[in-house]
Image (cartoon, rainbow, N blue to C red; front, side):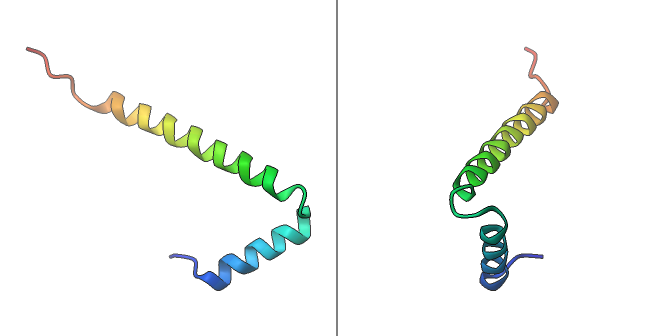
Length: 55
């Protein structure tokens, strides 16, 4: 399931109406930071699962 241009435009329009133009960049920045932290955390978990090559 992927979002098309129309769906993304509607979501952005509703967000703009709900939060206003001044708050929207702050919300985007916070969402990006949260996703980056989540990605880094899951990468750390996946790296822990890799077997260690003992010689």
